[in-house]
Image (cartoon, rainbow, N blue to C red; front, side):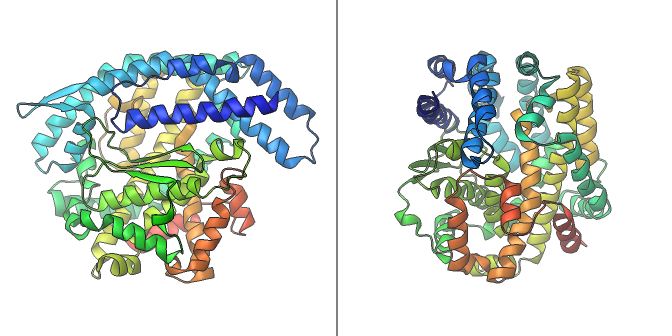
Length: 495
């Protein structure tokens, strides 16, 4: 039973990820996942879930790898059981957003293009007007999103769990409320430095007080477009190639990692990596916008691509796809955050006077992290109470308090990822600093020039998704994951 299940599991993942790649990269106008779920529906029925639970219960404790493998399959079955229940709503939301357009400056702008335009628009009045038009599209899809969330909640309870939160805490072995409380220390311990530096930057760069700034201002402010000329588009691939070469990785020989940088109109503004076949076919996708944001997005997704592309072919299939997403996010942030390393900036881009940029980038990063801590707090309440009207107001309040950018309730469901993904980012931010400091201690401050560091990374990547972020932290001797180093870094750089 398990061998046939594994075979179909591999086929489903490849088919599902290829469909999402084609849609999100703008090569397909419609996301067609319902037929995929129908074709592989036997993988995520209640009977399949019961069978996997029984196999896990019957497996002796000393068969650690086999038990871990079955647990991965069980996580997959339950997550996809939920998604299968809401597949038609997922398609409807995707179809709506992929076809929605905005009348702007006498032309039709796609919903995806509007996100890019807002980040690039210097004129505040124009930016706010475009943001409002985009918000209207989001508001018009909220009924569909509310129906989808309600359906996911009902399906979670149908599996015998008290609510959606309890289901994922049991599945992932995490206490999301405790994590939200622990991560709350990021808010409290960076509050003074964050508000002071944000107020100064808003006044200096945008002529705004901290009480005037709103979410549309945040999208432009966090883009750091004033520094874009220091990050030339034509140098991006060279920088990527040389960074990887310093670690002993020759990207020219990585035929399994395909970079898709075509600027298609309906291509999502959010860079992504799609591991269609691990490790044979990895898609690294970005939508070029120019400047430091492109570098950050590309480096981040390259971390995912190297992780999945570096997995051993001999790995069990279930260790290639279904794991602790915080682990892959940690590798992604490790490369993403090279952008704030003065030595790396000097060597790769001849950016020697980078002090002001690094402080601006760290302030933007802190804003993003504070936003995600607020998201996790909001998600815990939403998924436990199911009270959507209250959730909309809570989202607005928590986001405004955490980021200091006035945020409305419209995006409370648009800004919601499935399965507590915000928790993966938060744990990854904590672990990445610990991992980076470990590499600096062992291989030197310029760890990215050490082929021994690259060898260790490849050794870690070979294990794919077999281990959690906490497992790897323990294995290299830096665990348990905490936020102390992260908080200290922000307070040190922004003081």
